[in-house]
Length: 199
Image 1 (tube, rainbow, N blue to C red):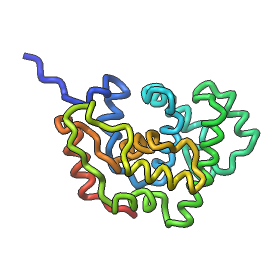
Image 2 (image 1 turned 90 degrees about the vertical axis):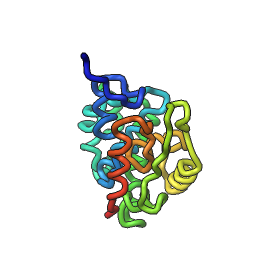
Image 3 (image 1 turned 30 degrees about the vertical axis):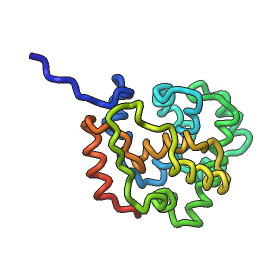
C-alpha cells in the first residue's frame, strides 16, 4: 500500500515549488538581507507566476549583489544597463529600477526604525497573523494589514508595493501564516511564530 501523499497547499505542485513551500513560505523571517530579497522578488513577480521568479532566484542573487541593500542602493545607470542585458532576470526596466529605489528606501527605514525587521513586525506587534483557512478560495489577495503597510511603504519611497504585492510578501516572510489548516507546514509555522523574537 502506497503512503499517503503530503497534503500540501495545492499551489505547491512539485519540485522547486514544493521545496519552497515546505521550507520557506510562511516561516517567520527577521534577517535583513532575506527580507530585502523577498521584497524585491515579490515586486518582480507582479504579473508573473511565482514559479517563474523562483527559477530565476539564483540569477537575481548574483545580479543584485546577493541582495545586500547597501550595495544595491549604490547601483548607478551603468549597473541598470548591465541588468537590462541579463537574460537570467526579468528585464523590465521599471522593476529593475525599483529594486535600486527600494534598496535606498530600505536603508532609510533601517536608520529610522533600527532595522527593517523591527519596522515590519511592528505592524503585528511582533506576532504573526495565523489564519485558519481550509480551502484556497478563502485566502484573500489583500487585507487591511497589507493596505496599511502598502500605503506606508509608498510614503517612505518604495515602489512596486501595491497591497497585493505586499500581501504576498507578508505571506512569504511569515508575518501572515496562510498555509491551509490541513497542511503539515501550518502547525510548524504557527509554532515558530509563537517563539519568534524580533531583534
